[in-house]
Amino acid sequence: MNGARHRLGAGWITALALFVALGHSAFAHNADVLLARLRLENTPEVRLEITADVQGTPWLRHAPNPVEVLGAGLRVVLPSGRSWNLSELGKPKITLHQGFAPPAPVPVTFEPGEPIPELLTATWTWRPSETPLRIEVPLYNPNSVLLWSTAPGTEEPSAGWQILVGGDRSREVALPVAPSPLAWNWKAYTAVSVAALGLLLQATLIVVRIRKHFGKRVVQP
Image 1 (spheres, rainbow, N blue to C red):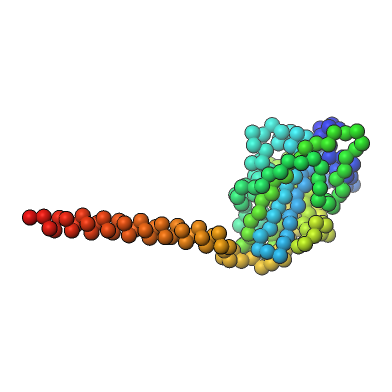
Image 2 (image 1 turned 90 degrees about the horizontal axis):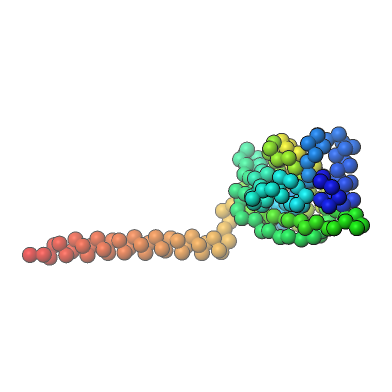
């Protein structure tokens, strides 16, 4: 990390100690840690929340758009081999906060007397077309990622949390609900219906104009 001001406290240090105990290569390049929570619900949608201490992470602190960097720094991989960066899954919801409210696999606390850093959480929500999912950290990402999931209806971390570095791919995470990418909601139906009616109206107007144009030519002496 980058000094006491940029640490996330004793729980964070405990997570790093686990890296050391495992001999993980993350410490070879002094990577900072991102918190990644995959929230599973009894709906076709899933949410992935990425929390970072932007000021304590140099490559985010100096980026023109830290959220864009976060979105490009993780990929969702499907069983078919297709994959997308988080940034390709739509615009995330952004929140700024002090402290990490939801329980993490390693408790995130703060050392007495240290200023609590402001954290940024970017949340992507999308509807997967396949299950199970895997999360991949691209090779160029210098951050280590603490990844875990939560079961529907609970904030508690599920068993089997993981620590990933650049080039790693997580274990498979099965969705509790079968994917249904074609089961659109009413907003999607409304948008498509309005667009279709607009195209139909435009085509009708074109046909009327053509008929009027040729009709005038026929009646001319």
